[in-house]
Image 1 (cartoon, rainbow, N blue to C red):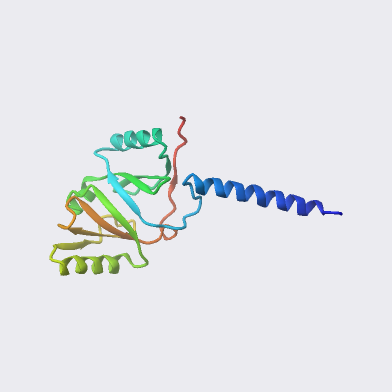
Image 2 (cartoon, rainbow, N blue to C red; image 1 turned 180 degrees about the horizontal axis):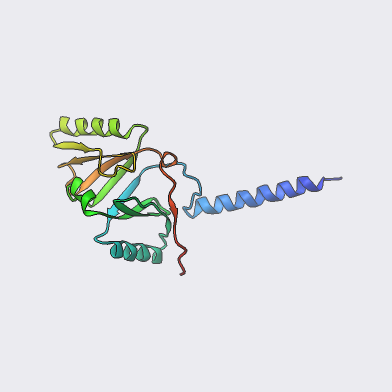
Length: 172
């Protein structure tokens, strides 16, 4: 039985691709931006502290995937979706010193933040929306006494955000 060489090569490439894809998914390293489930964000006291925490997490198997820095925030996005950041004093002031955040994905961050604030107010909590904490990005924040020290942020899907910087290569 004759099997064309191109068919053998195609089958080999598909098999290797399937194996690599399965391995990446099994190790928690989905190479695509789908699904985007949002993020959990923690702030470090300084840029040096952020770097130290990122290095510590790497020693425990949670490696940096890429950096996403803006004028007001330096971010390290880890492979598991956790974000370690260091915010400028101006951003912290706008967010009343909040040092952690639950990030949620939405098509309209401002409208979703307004709905969340109304939701919390209807349940007896104070809540307000901050739209200008990071003018470079389409992110809306909800500050509430329901979660002191933590904000809820609404952002567009990662494919609708500016292109991030690659993470520097780490030697282990």
